[in-house]
Image 1 (cartoon, rainbow, N blue to C red):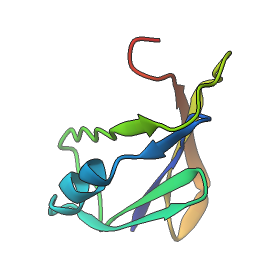
Image 2 (image 1 turned 60 degrees about the horizontal axis):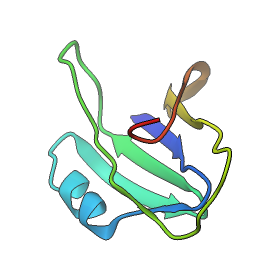
Image 3 (image 1 turned 180 degrees about the vertical axis):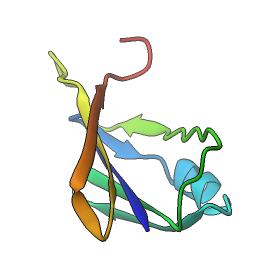
Amino acid sequence: MVIIEVSLLSGFILASRSRMLLEHRTIIKKIEVEANVVYIYLEKLNDESQTFILQLEQVIQMKNLKPAIIKIYDYYQPGGLQISSCSGAGS
């Protein structure tokens, strides 16, 4: 099992519509939202390219946003961690 862990930008939450769209993808086994982190559980990955789009809703106006951290790792071997960062759209 592969986990994509997305730390949300400060002042943002995952839009409910985004969660529903993600849950309908066959590759996604489960989605959990805890505090400011979204966990997307995938049964497995293969060589096929995958794109995941998370729509966020801004609930608090923030200044000087820091990039969000995205971690991708094997549930059974978290030591092989891949880390990226991204900013909100248009940033």
